[in-house]
Length: 127
Picture 1 (cartoon, rainbow, N blue to C red):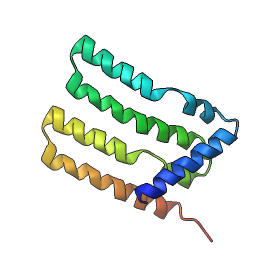
Picture 2: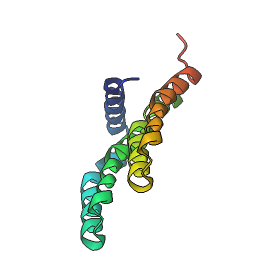
Picture 3: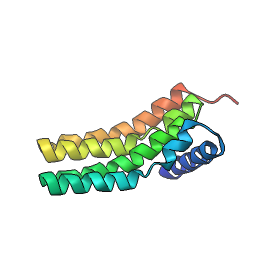
């Protein structure tokens, strides 16, 4: 599944969510970007964690994809909305910054295509 299809799936899920009266609608209204900026500034000013602290900005796409997952009832669609790519980026950066494992750490990006292949193979749509 490519990025464009994932973005379209998120937008469809958000629209379905907003039109329905579920709890996922409330999740989409939270000002997560403002909360993340406040957390980043707090970590920077209070602890001096400007460099590793910017990683909290990866929480924004993760949060909205998880919120979109809450709006979908079909298992396959829900699993395809799982934020595997931003989580792999975060894991790679954490491995690199804190453990200096840049070289073997790049292998974590292979999880992204394998995840979508596995999900779509297990939950095939029948015509």
